[in-house]
Image (cartoon, rainbow, N blue to C red; front, side):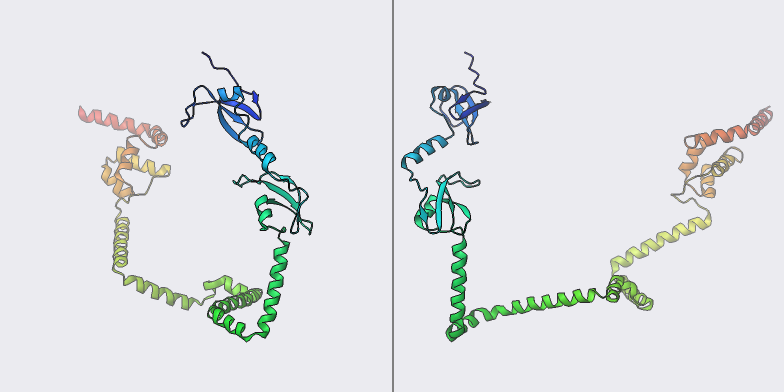
Length: 320
């Protein structure tokens, strides 16, 4: 049997939103619908309860009916400095399901108070009474403290050990004021901004010499420095001897033409060309075989076409 579509229908305070699967912790059968109450809460209800009128709200209707029957109406009553104006809705963020009342204080401020606090006398004002009583209590204690040596002795025993922190805090505030005043001086500010740049060059060299000596005493650092110096010396000797140095590349047409000249007309080997030019053997192979700089190689062959023809005729004569 096809279930009835209750979407967008109203039952009491509930408006049906959509169909949802059956909740796990329920013994009821049939279809279940997600509904939104007028108060904003959402609840899952079975279709049977909605159609029979068993469930008409999320629970707020029942609480209102119970409160009308058993809750006392406090409108117009006076509690301390607060006079009740009307029933107020539950403030956001509070879980307690109790009655709240909007009250006005004698000072003119309005506040929302729970009924239990009004009955017990815990809340008697908007907060002005606590401020006044605290100020009065402090004034009385101050007068009694001036004329009572026993209170003074008790205060010294209790608070003298913690005065060190108070003194340090006062010292920090004093030094902060001095620093701020000195920073306002343009000469002092320029000197601090320069920092070590204003230091004498001889003093700087002496400090750097001392730092280098200290780092050289570390065996790990000394080993790394010696290894780096050894590699730098090898690279320098390779350049002086004319050997190939990895990392150099061919950039101009003259370099490409010189390599092709050595390969095709001088008949030099790849290793010799690499050692004389100063590049790797792999780069020489790519250039000669046309895998790199193809346009340059083609242009060089067009320029030297007559020389290629003379070389081929000479090879034929030698063969005959």
